[in-house]
Length: 418
Image 1 (cartoon, rainbow, N blue to C red):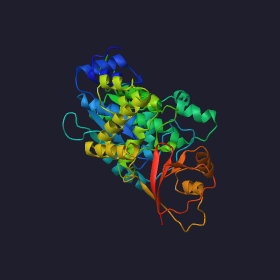
Image 2 (image 1 turned 90 degrees about the horizontal axis):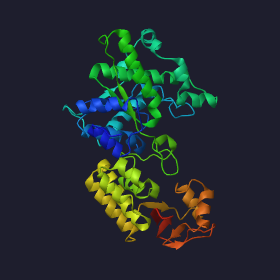
Image 3 (image 1 turned 90 degrees about the vertical axis):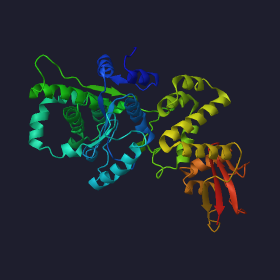
Image 4 (image 1 turned 60 degrees about the vertical axis):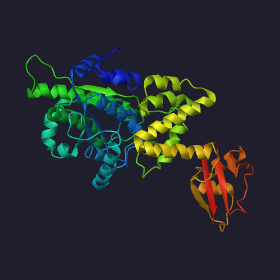
């Protein structure tokens, strides 16, 4: 589809578009002038990770194209727990935990979204400010009639749980209603016409679009003969080349906060992605031109490593700044191309330990998840000490004051023996 609006045209080029409630209608609205949209996240984690960025980067593009973002931190919905994409209940968290997370998440958000009082400056809101004031009986009477239990039961997040006969609480069942009310509230207060989201939120977004239309008719807030239309637009769920979700709850979080994840580790993640992910990640996590991306994604064999270095540099520059990105690039080149050990991360080995087995050390340091994995790597020749392969599963660490430890092609450490 050929778009009139700059935002949708660029989002399409980057491969950020997935589903939309009315793509032609949204394109028309966006081409007429500035539009207000919101993107939300529940502060259930210590910060944001690159899974969030897959949909947040489309909001960054939205702002760059002259539109106004609203960023919603779900202080109320975080206490409920979103069942979307989950096959079991989320653990309950405290208000104190949520408040602490809001501070660090806002710090992370400011890396990607510009907040100020200008026409395109982002507005920060917390749904605890309005959901916390609602009276339950009035809420049920005003909002409840506009939701169909039949449709809610048919949503993917609910069907998944029911099919597996997993427990789903009344608390979780209300999540969709609360998020839908958020959209209506932001429409009424800010004139918000669009919700941007990740693919796993699509059912909740549809509920918000339909609820906003219905309740405006019910309240008589629209002129006769006119309709109220708000829009939902989603990105796909971010998966790597192996089909694995990128996100904190999946145990492989890549935090955007430098206090939680060293910027060099952030850089190295992008530097070491699968070849098949290079084009997609360049489109999502960098702001290179499409022509430049198309050139880079055609690289093959050894050339693909140059494309990965550019990806890692550009992604780190947006998240941590250009100076830090340069430092990460120089450090990576010293370690992996010049074979320098000066900048290797250091770990310690206790020479007085009764157990000096290499596999046990790898497990104890968390380099390998289990002893079995450590032994398998040793057996397959993936472990080196001072660039010499170790293939003896019963190898003992003895006779060193320090040594360089290599685990596969991507992990290297300087081990200090105490």
